[in-house]
Length: 273
Image (tube, rainbow, N blue to C red; front, side, top):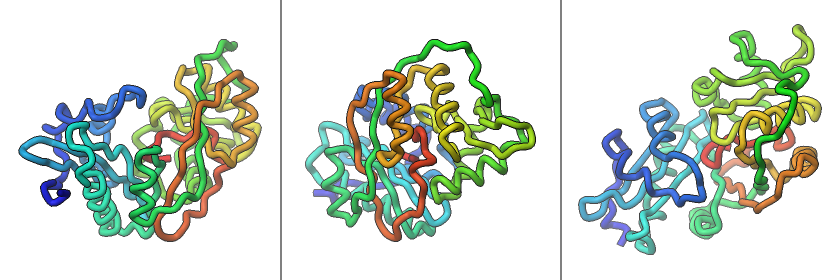
């Protein structure tokens, strides 16, 4: 029955039609996310139409030879028709056409069997922590607002951590971000981008990671999601009183990505890592 689905690029007039697709517990504005990235070179959003209405939505991100899939959702009235599989396959093909020789996603329990059918394999897991805004003095040693001179070093640090060239994506979130640099002429220890999902934190060492993660949880109430392999981040969050609430698999297709999960102290979002 998936042949009944007509797949096409998402356009701005679709935004009000798909804004309600994510379940409430995802706790974000899907319209705002799509609007922010629509028209960017790295962003590949698709919808599937059935009977004159939008029945499915999803998007991909292309970072050179690495692509991400995310927010693949079928509306409740159109599930169990093969539409999720059809839309995912279409996104995978567009990412391959964009030059992505590997593809990555973070799966829900509902989506994991579908992605396994398409050849994705589990290569790790993420752990979810519930948190709240912490009380504090308002400043953390070494943490200060990002400045223009930080950008090149920030992007190098992100490539080292993720194995991806995410310059096009991250450039839109630098304003309002923070750096950890203990000495004016010292190396950048890490960075925090509060505008990217629940707040991306990348750090080269434990000192920077703990400082930025503490600052993040003084700055906002959003929880943190960390790679399961980052034991230092897990211990630190538990020490702050955060509650571990679950896990989700990281799945990859193609050449496995060489990344350093110990440098990711808080992923940005499930659709980009």
